Amino acid sequence: MAELTGKTIAVLAAKGVESIELEEPRKAVEAAGATVHLLSVPDGVEDGRVQGVDGDIHPGATYAVDHLVADVSAADYDGLLLPGGAVNPDTLRQDQDALAFVTAFFDAGKPVAAICHAPWTLLEAGVLEGRTLTSYPSIRGDLRRGGATVVDQEVCRDGNLVTSRNPDDVPAFSTAAVELFAGR
Image (cartoon, rainbow, N blue to C red; front, side, top):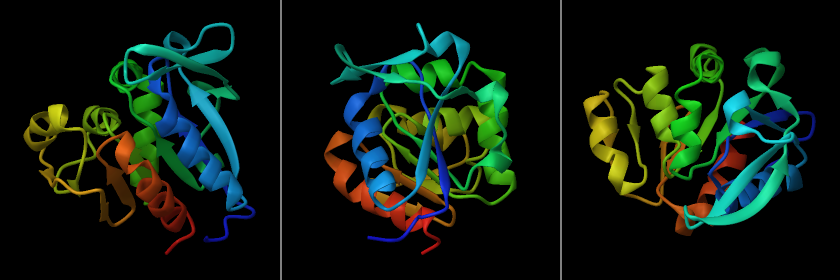
């Protein structure tokens, strides 16, 4: 696995995050040596924790939030991981601080890895024009209307962006995210 020692990766998530899409990529990034911070937005946190879901509807684990996204800068991080779940990105895309944070990663050319419904946040941030990516099938029309080319494959890499479709893709997505964050 690629070496990420000395790198700090942001995971941006809110209530309704798909548990496996947060847990497994996070473990892979940490196992490769990175420090990981879980960031969220005020509307996505309760008692300092984000509520995860399993299969988009069943309550899953909760996750301690390290910082609110408004209190940090993209300059503090070497990469951004966006897990899915339908409610999670729907919450994030309504928060101006989250959108500014995402936009700053793209403006700086920093690596971003997004899975499942997470590209909804990228769409709202206005960073998909001319990009090729994959996502959960139900949001592909939205992404196309936002100027993206959408493909149906396990992992899609377009420059500094890696995307995957759903929880079944998590193993391949986790590997691709680590490679992206390592600069490969």
